[in-house]
View 1: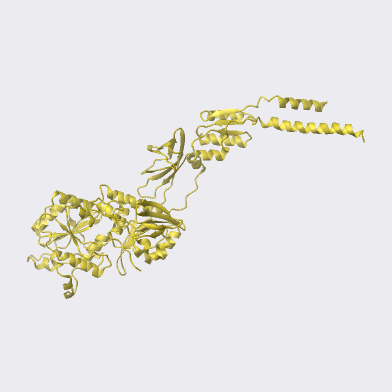
View 2: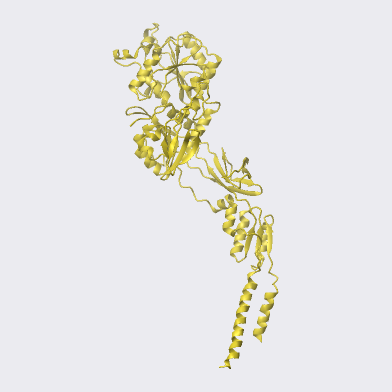
Length: 413
Length: 207
């Protein structure tokens, strides 16, 4: 009699939904205010948020905690997939490079704690902003979606070594970098066994003292062994002009050089970078990438060698741009060479991003990691309790029928 | 192995509107010979003459300027000289008169001060004097000792410095006379008196 009473109660509670069998719904606007109540709600109640934007990381973490405590936590909607990284430029003048990713044609406004830095329209692969300085954390708004990132620490500025025969190109590269604030060591050969040196007579290439080496011409060959070791251990190498024609360093180069391109320059022409010609990178290695292309070929290419980076710059007379260029060409020449050096300069291993950086810099990816993928809508099935109860009832029914059948069939034997 | 070096060094003589800019035509070939003789610097076999008022002066970061007569830059020359120096060129000015308070000296130093900045005495231990050959200061010339009978030896060269670098090098030594001969005549000298020119060019190319 007791078993039948229990069975009746189970059937009753299965057919008639308990009061907890409902779905809690919220939107991005009010989910934060509902979390407190949701925490007190029975774990049988599914929690669902409909999101147009990814909520703050604290909300996502709270939802994740509810999920891990037994709640069914789901979400739906199409928040924009955005991401940002901010890297301090390896440049004595400081500054930061801000890389943005967002759906194509999204307008993104970037700001730091001092105000708006810039706004860009993202195209296909993203957008990049270079800021001469940043104050505090950098944040961005893509519509209503807010995201941000902390600026990674800049690597310390170390020496740049310029090696070559005495020439205007070497002299003005060294001048430009010095004027920009780089500590520069030069080694210019002027006669057999006669070098002009500045910034230190001995040439010790190790990554604790030297950020990068710039080779201006094929006279680099006599240092090829030391330079190869330096690059493989993380140092940077710039092979400018014809430098990579030296067989002993050609194995480090991103590609091989073709014949120098010599465009016609009229006496009255204002000289710009590459206007008087360059060595094109004619065949790029499989692991080399083209950085700058011109009508006559690849002007700049780069590749990784061991832990270091090598950039091949086809320009061999950038000094003409500085001397004979238009207004501002001196500063542009400085900045350009500083950027080239910064692109290969030795950096100690990048620190792993703190969790708080990841959740702010790629909020949607962070939310998917915490809460799972989006659903098309709120869950339609009920709470797990009644389902479990139905299974339980079925088992009891089977057992009762077995018992009944057993008793009925016992007399037939 | 074939060497691929950067663009060659071209010895450029500045042509200015006033005065006699071409008073020392044998100096450029003699210096070019000296550079080729002592160094591996890729040097153009012949020099060029470039008007100071022409933008093409920016294509030659080393300029030689000499003369006997008064120097007065016109506006275009003044503008170009200033830009030339600001962008990193080195202007080497030599008084072909070797006198004190001569007309070239007075006017050229005035023009330099007005256009670029005041000249100061260059210390005799400046890196210029050890850029290639070692000198204790500017080499004396036979002309400054007896040319005008004043028995004056100028102890220092003068210079306008930009960020510690010589932007204008001014000489009252009359190197224009001292170096104004055919290169083949060097064989008659026990010590080549053009060696200091190597220091000037090497300094210009490396500092």
